[in-house]
Length: 209
Image 1 (cartoon, rainbow, N blue to C red):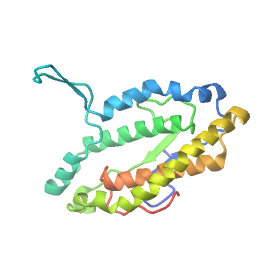
Image 2 (image 1 turned 60 degrees about the vertical axis):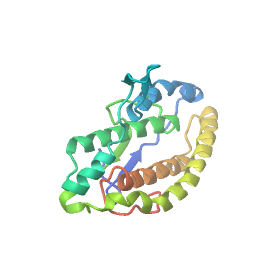
Image 3 (image 1 turned 45 degrees about the vertical axis):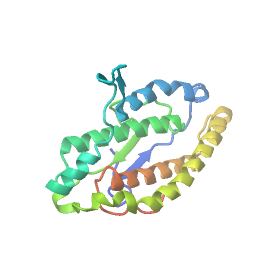
Image 4 (image 1 turned 135 degrees about the vertical axis):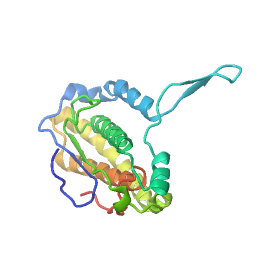
């Protein structure tokens, strides 16, 4: 794990490859489907009911442990370590898949190894560093970030299309585009750390770096 480059308690770095694989890039939208299906099963709780509406079969899990964490911080001033570890590892897994889909890396996303996608998200001291009432309003305070990020992610999609053509013709992902896309992902991670992962009370900066 590399050292953090900033002082905000959430950071992301994705190494830019010197060369990108043209063949896997051409079919990336297809090759990502199996691992993306696994992610869907991890973050969504599905169920099936019989015609009588009595029997229920669960197909997935609960995704990010959010509401229980809110209640635990609110009433107990605690953030259980295994909840944090689950949230962190699920975030890392989703980020690896996102980086693969956006052509930032060619390695097929691992379910448990960091590969070349590094997330720095320290475990919080809930009793001393987190205000027990803040989880109730963080989602609201983060609304300005949601608005800006909505436009930035539209730009990311266009950048991914440009990068797709660039890789097919040159075999390289343009470094400037790579830095921009990673910057948007870093910004999103910091907002998630603040509003949903609940690992910090520091308001995220409006910055890509």
